Image (cartoon, rainbow, N blue to C red; front, side, top):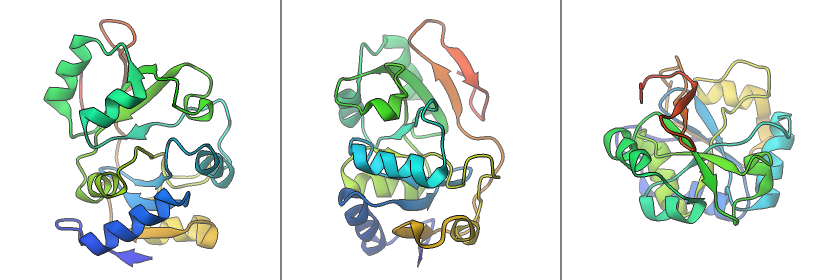
Length: 199
């Protein structure tokens, strides 16, 4: 477990986490609401570990974190102009947009739906980790399915122990509602989960 300053996370800590992720490992890290469980989202074996460690049903897709529109455009197709306007207004921030997945996104990530939820986080550790890794990351909450989402690194450790390769301890997170999730494959978008942002 590595302690990380939320305000100015150290480059060394982020680079260590990024190296673990690029090698197919699992890293827990703080987000705007809870601790998330990160894996290289385009590495099918790493994604399978996320499902296995969490005990997550195969029918539940994983959202993906990005740090730029350039990475976004490698993951999705047919992005409506209105969806890009939402990104311009609310990213970085707690808004997940569901869009049509590109062919390179593992089927396990999409749960066979052909769509994928993507967002750009505003938490400095989450965003810094995506940038340092240079790849899109998964970010379900770092808890076994059915358990309460964790707001501390200690809670993550109690859940998983050494099943994870690294935990970045950025202190307590805010908790509360997770990101707003909006389906942008139709217009107007359909809110699938209400969170802090109203699209």
